[in-house]
Image (cartoon, rainbow, N blue to C red; front, side):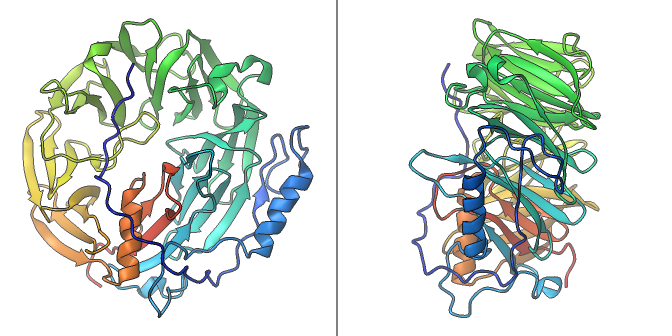
Length: 488
C-alpha cells in the first residue's frame, strides 16, 4: 500500500538564522521526572532496572545550569528585544506577539522527533514534546508546571476528559507504558503497562511498527488504545483494564474519541477498510461497522460530532479528496463535500486531530484555500459562501462563536498575518486585525506556519502550535498572538 499524501502548505523559503533572542526573564519551573509506577508527582519514585538515575540526574543538572530553555529563541534581529512573557500580556494590542515557547528538543541524526499532544484547561495550554510535558498560561506564557519523560513519547490522546490526558511512553524498547495525568497541575493519576513487555512484539516497537503506530482516544470515561495487532480499553479513573482484542497485523490504525469512539483499521490481507463505532466495554460488539473498498482510498477522522471523515482520492478525480458525512447511528454515508481545486488544507493523517485548515460545527464544514475560506452545508454538501482574502496566501477557519467565525490569513517572512472575524451565515467580514509587522515577528510567525501543527484560538490568543514533529532546527513550540474578539 502506498503512503497517503500529506497535504500542507507549499514550502516557503526558510528565513536564515539570526542572532538568538535573549532568554525569558521568568525562571523555569524545575521539571519533575516521570517514573513508571511512581507514587505520583510528589511521591518517591521506584525506578525500573532500565532507568539510570545518574543519567537523569545529569540531564536535570544540565537543564538547571543552563537556566532551563529560552522562551524566546526562534529568530531575533530586532534590537529592542522581545517582550517578557506576561510583562504586558493583559494590555497587549490586538495582533501583537504576546509570548513564544521554544522547543527543548531539536532534530538530530536519528531523524524527526515526535511532539504529538496538545490539551487545554480554562487557563492553560499543555504541550507534549518528545521527552517532556509542559503547561503554560495561555494569556501570559508563564510556565506553570512540567515533567520529564524517562523515555521517548510514543502516542498521546487526541482529547482530554475531565482535565485528564493520557500518553504512551517507551518502556525498554517498546511502547507499552501508559500514563494518565492531570492537566491542571501535572500530577500523574495512574501508570500501567499496556501489555507485558515480553508480549509486546514488533507492533509496539517504534523501529518495527511501520505505518501503524499506536493511537490513544478518550471516550465516556475510558481510554482506548489501538495498534497494529490489537486494541484495548481501560478506565480513565484508575487505569484498570476493561476490554481487549487481538488481530492480525494492520497496515494502519486510527481512532478518535469525544462524542463517539470511532476506529479505523486497514489490515493485512483484508480487502476492505473498516470503520467502527465502539462500545469501550465490548470491543468485540461494535455499535456499528461499515466497510469501504481499499480502492476507495484512505480515510482520516475529522470530527466525531458531527461525524466527518476525509477520503483520498476524491470520487471526482485521482488527485483530490472529499469530506464524507456519516450517520452517527449507522455509519452510512449521508452526504459528501467533493474536492474543489481551490482547497488547500494541512496534514490529513490518522495520527493527527483532523486536518489543519478544516473545521466543523453543528451544520457546516469550513475548508481553507488559497486566497479563500469556503463554507459548506453538511446536510446537502453544497457551498454556502466563500470568503475571499489575499489570493497568494492561505486563509483558514479557526473557531466560531456568537454568530462569528475567526479566519486566519497566514504570515510569510515578508508579509504579516491577519485575523478576520466574519459573519458565520454569510462569510462577510466584520472586522480585520493585522498582526505585528516587526521583521522578527513576521519571520517567527511564518516559521510556525511551515511546521506541522494546528492553529487554535483560545482565550483571546491565536496559538500556533507545533503538534507534529521537529524537522527544522528553527522550529518553535508555541507562538501566541493577541486576538481579542472585540475591539480594544
